[in-house]
Length: 350
Image (tube, rainbow, N blue to C red):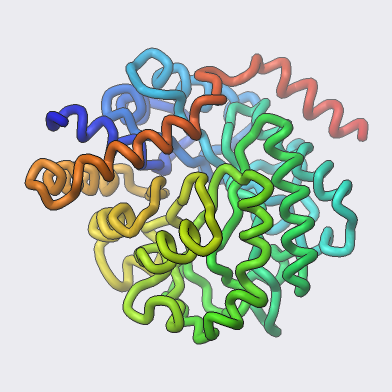
């Protein structure tokens, strides 16, 4: 592979955040000239349904005019306490409030969210949370479907099927499970001292159910699991990603890092270095949600490593094939704006 081909393949692994409400020349160049795999939007990028649809349309059109596969446009729209899209989009309930519902209700909830975000121009909703709420004061208490690993898996799988049948990719998070920590990875690096047996009994069953349901992606968290890899957070650990998720659970879809600019990471190393380590550990998709220039720096470093023989070109090619395969069903452009208006009007009537 020549340098340009290597860089193009690596660029598809990067997903970046953007600063504002519009796609200016810099933002359009990121997806059209740099060929990054995707963007992720937050509340700072959303003012109204029509505005966010236009932003997503402009970004996806820029990628469609280039030589790259369709652009991922991601959002964290879990509902409830984590919802980047406010009213008139569906804004609740928390998954904790749905833990007593049946599978049909979770399928319908996932489908409703999926239809809305898809009509708004997104194609990947980073939901559902599959952490099992297993301790008092746990950080995921409101975002978790409950305390029973089996039911969390069943309900989460129903949510995933609903969202993906609606045409929007889903993502199970935060592997291998953040349900037994009170520490917030946005701020600090937690340490989880569970044994492998405890992890297999409580934390892992929902993710196995998600894999069996065909979830498009699994997000790896920034916590150290001492029984798995005491030296590295899960997001940077080949043991967690390649041996546990890929090997033991048999997951074949896309693996995403959590945001590599979170406090759990930047307290240990620079985000661009973390991106390199996350890629080498086995993540297919690297989220850098605030400063795109860090993603570009990491992209150059990885390209240099491949050209110097420090990273095998075959690894890059394999990762790129998995990404392209995961994008095969995606359209280049979002639905017409009238589809979004109709979806929101229908939800208001319902």
